[in-house]
Length: 387
Ligand SMILES: *Cc1c(COP(=O)(O)O)cnc(C)c1O
Image (cartoon, rainbow, N blue to C red; front, side):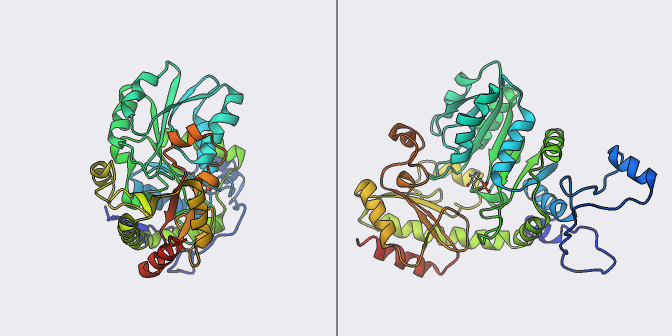
């Protein structure tokens, strides 16, 4: 078994007769059959082959194989976006009347799904607090089917104990699903801690250059088979072009994420010393409340730093207005450093109490640290803090 970096590069789909070195792009919506018998057997699922690109394509297969190798997963399916992966995973596995037990801090659109879409099918959600995992067992109902969590969380960069969640899920025979987007498979492999399925928005650090949308779910083969059958009929598949881009990106994931984390730590250390900053949250700073846990389950601290500016919402907005080099943008995990002010933007629709629950204070700024020179990133933050 090769190591992580090698799998990312050497997971090879079959070469064509041209013996290309770099995996080519297969832009084809369907595939030909040899004869009537080949066609019959293919439609009867008796053959493991490409039939139609809504089901599979060499480029999506390569992407899936690489992520499976990185996450120590049995199988996977690739989606057009992270949200297509989240939705299809739930929709494939849950029935009307089932119950979801979710971390209170999950991605905004996942939260919206719980609140506005799943209740239409009588699927309801309860929430456990990020810093009170002991409360999980008290929230389990006879119809609970899934535990869902993200770690580190967005945007507060809290850490959830994946091993603990894995134990609870096993004990109560629940499916543990972890959205591993912030950590990437390079920093953290939730399956090793007992997750049954791992979801990624590949749009973030997996692409890493802010070009394409993509998503993936990997994990236990029997669960993936259900997700595959749901997806092949409903059509949320990743496009071959995006899969090709993402597979190339994976070849340099380890190198990129190492540098992202190095830069993020420098940014976090700078902010921690600044007098206009009330506190900084970064998993690999000693001051992070779950620093020991982060070190146990993550290789490095990730690229997202959260900090609280003294002066609340107004100060947060002033700070954004003073930024010159860095981007104000909705994405994260890009080569370009991105700053956001969650209380007035991504999380503005939540009530104050809901924001508190998700760990979002009024002056909190989230920095997705990119790959510019760290001195330049810090200079821009420093001048913007002088408002
Ligand atoms: C961005 C994101 C998603 C959604 O992914 P898209 O590719 O934008 O659909 C899901 N979870 C997390 C943690 C994210 O950051």
